[in-house]
Image (cartoon, rainbow over all chains, first blue to last red):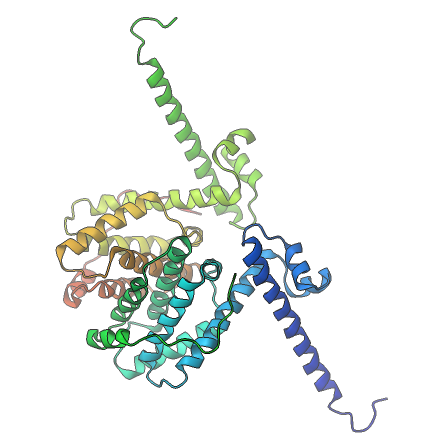
Length: 218
Length: 218
C-alpha cells in the first residue's frame, strides 16, 4: 500500500533511473574514446570497450549492439561536445553569418590540431544531433538576413557538411597548411553568396581560443 | 634450351599473365557488385564473393584480404566505370568549366537514378583513380581559363568531392527533387567563382544521355 505524501515517488524514480542510464551511457562513450586513442579504431574489439568502461557485459549490451554502434555514438558525442565549446564562444554574437563563419573556423582548427579526433569523427556519415541543430538554426538565420542566397537549406547544409568532412579526411591523412582552413571557409561562404568584402574582413579577424576545452582523442 | 626466334616469349608470357590477372580481378569485382545488389553491403560475407566469382578461395585471397577491401575496390571500379561513360559525352567539349559542369550533372543523375549504386559508392572515402585524375585535370584546366578562382586545387577538389559525396548520402536515404541536383552544381560553381550568368546558361542546357550505359547495382 503506498504511503501518504509519496505520490511523486514513482515520477522521481523514473527520473533517477533516466539519469543513471544517461550516466552509464556517457561512461561507456568516454571509455570508447580512450580505447580508440590507445588502440585505434580498426583493432579495437567489443571486450576492450567493456573492460575500459568497467561495466558488466550485459550492461554494455543494454546500450550498444556492436563495436560499430558504440564507435558511431562516441564520434557523435565528441562532435556535440565540440559544439558546446564552440557555442560558448558564439553566444555573444548575434549575426548568424558571423556565427557560422567563426563556428566553421573553430571546428576546422580543432580538427587540424587533434588528428586522432579528426580521423575518428570523419569516419561517420551521421552527425551529432547538436551539430545538425546548430547548423540548421544558423543556416536559417543567415538566409533571413538576406545576405545569403541558397536554393534551399539542404544544398547549403550538404555543401558545408560535405566540404568540411572531406577536409577532415584530408587532415586525417596529412598535415595541411593553416591557410587551407580559412581558404575552405572562404569557398563555402562564397558558394552561399556572401559578399566577398565581408568575407575578407571576417577572415581577417583572429580566431579566439575556446574557454571550455573540447574533448581530445589522444 | 630456348628455341631460336622465341626471344620475346618471356616478355609476352609476363604480358599474358598480367592480362589474366586483370581479368580475374575484374571477375571478382563484377561478382562483388552482384552480391551487394542481392544481399546488401552489411550482410555479405567473404564466401558470398568467392562463390559469386566462381574462383578458388586461394585465388580470391591473392587479390583481396577481406570483405572491406573487395567492397572498396568494387566501389572504385564502379566510379571509374561511370567516369568512362561520362568522359565519352565530354570528349567533344573543350572548355574545362563546361566539362566540369556537365560531368557533375551526369554523375549526380546516375546517383539519383540508381540508389543502390549511390549508397554503395558513397560509403567509401577513397575514390577511383580515374575520378581523381579527370577531376584534377579539369580543375587545373578551369583555373587556367581564368574564369575560376580558387585559393588552391585542394580546396576546389575537397569542395566538389565532399559536397557530391554528402549529396549522395542524402540520396541514399531519401528521394530528392530533380532540381536539387542542379542547385548543388550551381552552389559548387559559385564557390569556384564562376560567373553567375554563365552558370545559369550552362544549367539551362539539357543533360544529354550517356551512349555507353554505366554499370548498375540492382
